[in-house]
Length: 201
Image (cartoon, rainbow, N blue to C red; front, top):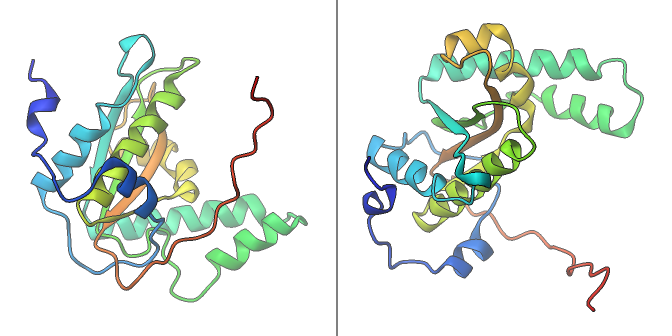
């Protein structure tokens, strides 16, 4: 079995701390499609994440077909509307405002969607998948790419229809859908609160 560590080319451009500070959730992309070598670099970074009991309970789906991305976006919008149309909360109203905006596309016109799937149920499977997601996003940042987690897509990706289309086995669950692409324009940093420390003993 090939050790994925040997597959990642050295990247002297950015330190780990620089990637953490420069990573952004990008919601505007150029039409450029990420090549297969770059996608594999990101996947190989993802599988180096910590994993409980060394289970490596993740699998990946890569979608770069524009028609599939457009149809999946439509399905996501349909589901969000169904879930929130009768909601009175501010969150429901905000979600509807987002998906009802003219020209809205769930994937922000990015040419690549990477879905991290959990292979089975378990107390730490989702955590492992999200750790892999963070590795992937930091690796993308270090290579000059933008990413964004698309929570709106989780429901649609877990329907029987889309599991069948994307060859996701029934026992697996789509956990972390991440778009990847070349950012269009500048994406300034957003502010963060200082760490809230409950105890330092």
